[in-house]
Amino acid sequence: MAIGRKVRASEAGIQKADELRIKRGWNRKSPAFALASDTSESTLGRFWGRKDLIRIENFINIYKALGTDDWEQYVDQSIDPSTEPTPEPLERIVDGVPKLGAFYGRDRELETLSQSILEHKVQVIGLLGMGGIGKTALAAKLVQRVQDQFDAVIWRSLRGTPPLSDFLIDLLETLSPDAVPASNRHRLIDELIGRLTQQRVLLVFDSWQSILGGESSGAYRPEYQDYSELLGQLWQQTHRSCVILTSREKQADFTIIGTAQPHKMVGLDVNAASQLLCSKGLICEQRHSNDLVNLYRGNPLALQLIASMIRDHFGGDISVFCVKALYLLMNYL
Image (cartoon, rainbow, N blue to C red; front, side):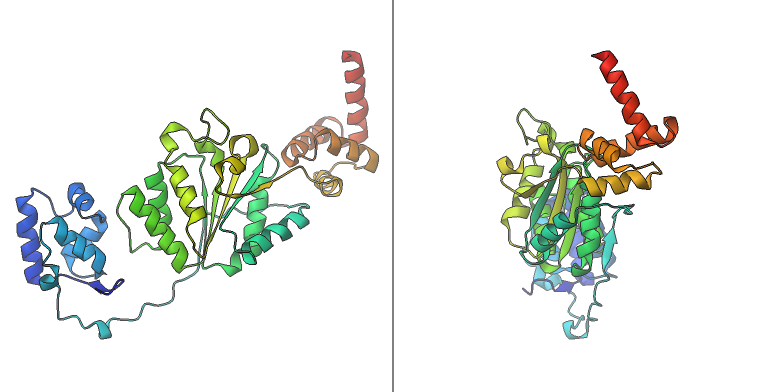
């Protein structure tokens, strides 16, 4: 059997398949039939229609599910493999990547992470940090820097907490819309690893903490335990691709999970944070802007929020805000 070869059933093969599936009480594309044959309902549709070829592995599984191993006699022999059209090169896929707004600093981090991906071929990287620290922005900037070295770039957020099977099917359909695999979790993971080996794919799983929240640090919520199998396989199996995960540090201790190279993020340095503040239209006298950056530990989200308040209520003058804030603090104490 030539793995990857595509075939279709002869008319006699379709007739035999119909006879056998009726005995089992299956419709042509029933979920029970798809489950038993370890294929998808769309693959069954192509099998019955005979217009399109299907992979020989799926063809064999269909006949085995129907109770026969004599699949070879049901192959349409009128198809000459040598005349099958050569597949055109796959178009580069970029799907779900968010637009990157203004970005400040983190040059050294970007350089280190780019080297990890392109030179050291690290397969799984975890960007960890507190909320608002800039994990998603850093991931987007990193994608922008390295994406030309990949055949496909797919970005998915875990905020909607999809079941693992749905999540995997979505990834596989995006990578290859014409070859949807079965819904069996283990087969889906194997199929994904296979694609990541055949192609060089950059995957970003944003907000990984959404599926965590068990009794201990880094533990999965009970209904998402199977994600640990996915992460483990992405780390352990050898492939050509890279997966970037973003997660809040306290909820994803990858040093405990042992399945990702962790990169712990801290706030922006003073220069980058000051650029951010000035971009918001504030009056940025260095001493006071430095005080503000240090007060909020360079957290980009916190600085953007306080910048809006200073612009709206203090005329954009950081020094006025700092004086009034100090006055209020002294009175409070």
